[in-house]
Picture 1 (tube, rainbow, N blue to C red):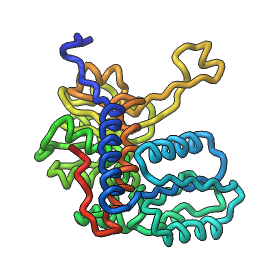
Picture 2 (picture 1 turned 90 degrees about the vertical axis):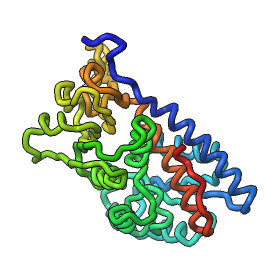
Picture 3 (picture 1 turned 135 degrees about the horizontal axis):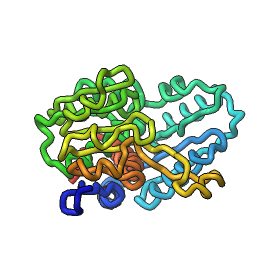
Picture 4 (picture 1 turned 120 degrees about the vertical axis):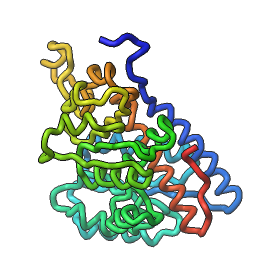
Length: 307
């Protein structure tokens, strides 16, 4: 095992996110004082999924602390698709709402793609609308998915100029993998997107200066898959049994990422922990997108938030 001097630097996403929220709070106060515009975020949750309830509560509290208007619409799990679409349209038409987020997953009677597609792209602060995906792909201003955006900010803070670095992204989802690839291409990285059918995945990962794990399989990527000195971004959030057998027998769990963290510490140059890495950046970037959307809705150039 490597000594402390040669172990990977831990990238503190929680601290960076707190700093970003502070900058958003300052920018929001200036927008209110200078233009009389309060950014407004509406979050819609359908049903009683416990994890979703916690996420939505945290989003609401952080939004309010940043000085923004925060609305939460809680709908029963029996809500029909037409009822949800009607609410989305009402929020589209509300000039005081600049960001709309429909919390996933949705109940089985609702087509998630239809609902996400009904959100005004200029209010789509999750960045999931096909219009925003297209804008990102061709380099036009749009709203970017929060987790890839937060991951990119952490990389730039750690490494500075990313030009010429080889980035390997393990996972090709529309939510993380694909937009992450587009963001890193825009930073002049050479990008490889790996997936379940990639051949010799360990060897492919070992070529990466930047390794982004977004595959949703606990600790799948081992330490010997990592190039010495690489910067590793672990997007995974997986619940596994507690280490203590007695606690595991009681159904207790712990959260781990897609990277075998203890092994990676001895190889990587820097790595995000789970929890406390990428996760806190997601809510911070949601607020950043809401602020940016409010500015653009009124023809105002947003302040830079990634300093």
